[in-house]
Structure formats: C-alpha cells, structure tokens
Amino acid sequence: MQTSKTGRRTLLWLVVVLLLFIGISYMFVPDTPEEYPGFVSESPSPTGVKAFYTYMDDQFGAVNRWDRSPEQLTEKGGNQLLMMIGPSFTPNSKEMDEYISFLESGNTILLMKENPDGMFGVETVPVQGDETGSITDQDGDGYQADLRSAFRIDPATHDNVLVYDNAGAIAVESTFGKGRLITSTAPEWMTNESILEQDHLELVLSLTQTTEWDTVYFDEYMHGSGNAPAITTLYPDWLLVLAFQAILLTTLWLMFKGKRFGSVIKPREETVRFSDERIQALAAWYQRGNRYRDALRLQADYLKRLLQERWGIPYYKDWPDIHEQLERKTAAGPEMETFIDELANVLHQDHVSKKTYLSWSKRIDRLRKEVEEG
Image 1 (cartoon, rainbow, N blue to C red):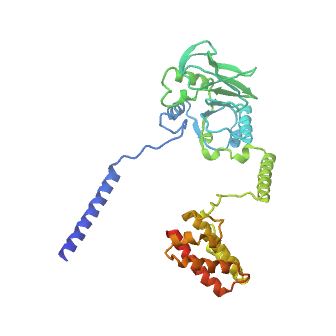
Image 2: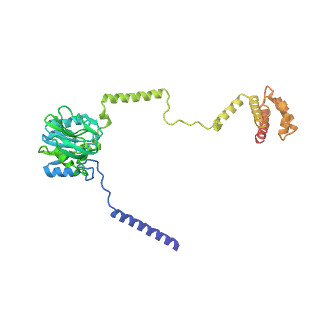
Image 3: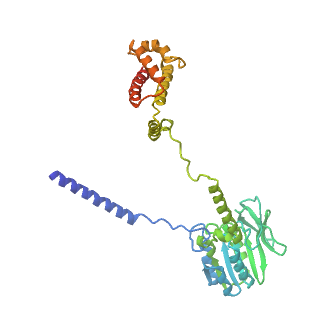
C-alpha cells in the first residue's frame, strides 16, 4: 500500500513539473513574425512597401490604403494617384472598365508589375537582360538599377517612354481621357529591401512626383486573394453552358455504353473459381435427374486421368487391361482384379441406383486418395 501511494505521488510531481515547463516555454519563447504578402503597404518585411508608403504620407499627408471595389473610385474626382504595386491577379473586364473610368476622370494610375501584359491594353515582349544595368530616363539622364523582370513594354504609337535600357522600355506613360497610366516592369524598386539600393528611390520619385496630388492611394484590393475573379467570371456564359452540356452528354454516353466507373474488380483466384454454391447446384441437378451413372462415369474418368498423371498408367486403356499394374501399385494386391471387374460391370449398366452410386463413389474415392498420397 505504501509503495502504491509513493508511485502516485511521484507521478503527480512529474505532471506538475511538465505543466510548469510548458508554461515557462510558452511565456518566454518569442512570437513568430507575422507573414505578409509581397508589395503590401503595411508590410515591414523586405518584400513590403511600407517604407515608401510612410515617405509618401510624410510628403503629402493625404495617403490612404484602398481595399474596396474599383467601382467606388469614380466618386473621388480628379487629380488622384492610385498606386498598383505588384498586383496578385488581373481584374475582370468589369473591374478593368471601372479603373479606366477612374483614369478618364482626370486621375493617374501607377502600375508596377513584372509582366503587366493584358492590363489596360498594355503589351510586353520577353527579353534577356542583365539583373543590374544602366538605364536612361526621357531626359537622357543615366541611372543604375536592378532589373529582375524578363519583359519590356511594347509602347503604342502615342505612348511616352519614361525609362528604358538596351533591352527596351521599362516605364511608359499612356493617356486615357483626362488621366494618365504609368506602367513599369520593375516593382522591386519600391520594396523595403531595395528602395535605397542603387538609384531606385530617384527612379520611383520621377514616376510619382510629376505633380501635386490631392490624394494618393495604395491599392490593396489587388492583393486580396478573395477579390480575385472566379473561374466562372473569366469565361463567357455561353462557353460555360456549352462546356457543362458537353460534360453531361459525355457522362450519359459513357453510361449508355456500359463503361465502368471506379476501380476494376479483381478476378477471384483459380482455386476458388468453382465455389461451394456451384458444386451444390451441380449435385442437385444430378440428383433431380437421377443421373447417377453419368456422375459415376465422370468420377471414374477423373481417376483414370489421375492414374496416368501419378503412376504413368495409360488413360486410353480399359479398366480390365490395367488391373495388373494396379495390383503392383496398390495395397489391395490380388483383390484389385475383382474390384476392376465389378467397376467395369457397373460402368456399363444402363441404370445405376442411388444406393449403388453411393457405394461405388466411396470405393473410387478411397482409391483416388491412395493414388494422390502414393
């Protein structure tokens, strides 16, 4: 009894020490840093743009984050700057029309994306340029900057090339009604880790501070994964209806043709191919038809095949012709001749009773076992 109490007391102390250790670890282990998506204005991580957001807020005092639908942008009037830095998806056609309406009202959008192809009608071309190189602005001034994008902008006829290098245009200005679209393939210039590297800050300021803005917006709507267009909005309704009908018709056709869905059933082993149910069905069929003679002949025929396989006695010989070989092989000895004569007589009868069948079936079965064990 004393030993049992000591064991419970020891276990209790172990539990207390373990809980105390877990509590201390929870209080003193530092929290893991919060993860942010790339190019987010509130992100202090190396891939965020919080540093430039803070700088713009100090300069203009009217900097905000825009996380609502673009249809509400048209209510803001003119002389607004909307900065779309590294958008994570391409807006659908309806949202793109809202952004264009915002531009035509006299506002400006700065789009910085490694490959802005397809947005606002911008077209790009793939190039093979250096990651770090010398670039030139529209005034002919040279800068040093990192260039990670493998694309350059293909400017339209009336576009104004703002920044370029030997591979092509890096920043282009386009006109939309009373507003302007400034497109760049170098969003990494604005990140926290790169804004002060090379001449990135000077290049970004040359794209954004060409006028005094009433309000500057950092578009966070384009960074929200929940705002990305669903697959049903990327394709026209008539195409979705045709696709659904094609899938439905294909399924019905396969069912009509008897195609199997799911895993294929594996065939049973050969050893269980003839199940007990089938054997019982065959036996019942022989009994109902009083086909005892046929059953006895089949049993005797199987025994002759077994004699050829095990003892080499030819199958084609009649029973009276093999009694000498059976006398030498079996334990019956001279009595085998009598057994063979009686068996041959029974097999040649036109009708065999059930009693006779059961008697001879047992005798044949004993000989079969002797041959198999032989």
